[in-house]
Length: 172
Length: 128
Image 1 (cartoon, chains in turn brown, blue):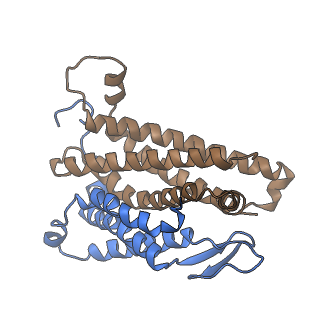
Image 2 (spheres, chains in turn blue, orange):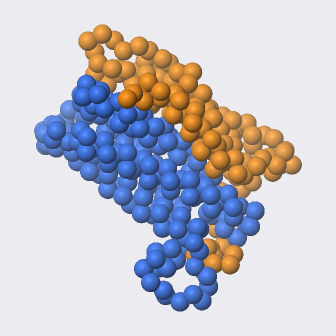
Image 3 (cartoon, chains in turn brown, yellow):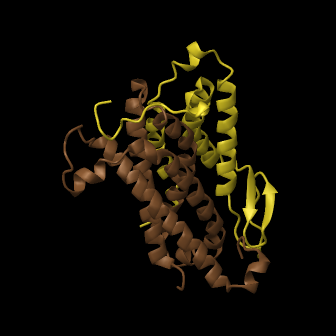
C-alpha cells in the first residue's frame, strides 16, 4: 500500500518503484546536506579576504554562502515531498516490523526526525530572506545561527534516516 | 561584511526587499515550531491519513480495525504550516514600528527550545 499510482505497475515492480523513490529522496538529502554544511562552515569560519587559496578546509568554507540559499530552500522542499511520499510505505512496511522487533528508541528518534523536517520547512522563507539581504548587518547574527541550526537539523534528519534504513531498509 | 564568503549584495528580487514579506516570513518562522508542538501535544491534525486504504479523514480519526494504522504527521504539518501562514499574514497588517521590534533571534532559538518538549512528547518510545 501507500501512495502508488496503479499505472506505474505496468513499467516497474512495486519494490522497484519504492526503491527508486527512496534513492531519489536519499540523493536529494545528500545534496541538501552538502550545501548546508558548506554554507554553515562559511558563516562559522569565514575566510578572510586575501587569505589565499589555502588547503581543503579553507576551500570548503570559502564558498559564497548566499548563492546556496535558493538551492537549499528548493532541496529541503523537494526532499521533504519525497520523504512524505515514501513515508506512506514506511508506516506500513517498516515501522510495524521495527516495533515488533522492539526497536522503540529507533522509532522514537525517527519521529523526532519527522518533527524537525516540518519545523525546517517553516524556517525556509526567513532563511531565504536573510540570505538575500547579506549587506544588511541587522540580519548577520540571525542568518548565521539560523543557518547553523538548519544544518544541525539536516545532519540529524539525514543520519536518523540512514540508521533507520540500516535497521529495516529496502530488501529486508 | 568582512569576509570573502559573504560579500553578496542585496538582490533584484522584489520579494527579498519587501518589508511585508520580511514580516510574514519572520512570524511564519517563529510560529512554526510553537504551532507544531501544540499540534503534536494536543493531537490536532488537520486531517488523518490511513495508508492501508488511502482514505483521508478531516481532523483526528482513530485507526480502523483491520485497515492498518492511521497517520497524523501529515495533518500536524498541515495544521502548523496553515496556522503559521495565517499568523504571518495577520502580522503583515500590523504597523512596521511594531513588526520591526520582533526579535530576529527567535527564529533560531525556538527550534532548539522546543526540543525537550518534543522529546518528552515521544516518551512512549524511550523504553529500556
